[in-house]
Image: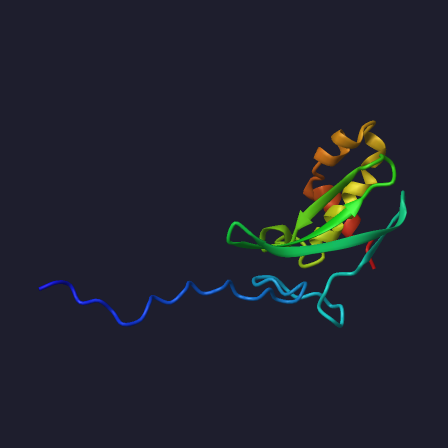
Amino acid sequence: MGVPVPDAEPAAPAAPAPLPPPGAVAGFVQSEEPDDSYPTELETPSQGMRRIHEQGGWNRGRQYHRLLIHCTAHDGCRTQREISVQTCRALGDLEPMAFLGAWIEAAGGFTTAGAHARHRPGIAAVRAFFDTMD
């Protein structure tokens, strides 16, 4: 007597859950924008109006949602900020935008794109930029 063989093959693993709309990351307050997404532009004193790009998806089984910004002071210079509970804990859901603004404002202190791209503004600089946002 052998081991019974099932009649049907095992079910395939379930697909990952669909992505929520931009700005709908669990664990933090939603944006005040009518469509619950982040603003697409950020006004900065040193570089004027800057376009913000949103990215999201799955990477290694983990969902991500982030904002990207390009610096005009250095050719090819850009940075990004993930949107998560950790990056929104001090100032709420606009903290990632304030981080990008503080990063842009620090551009004058760097002579190369690489040095500026590696820069991470501290909470005091982020808070100062946040206080200038409408």
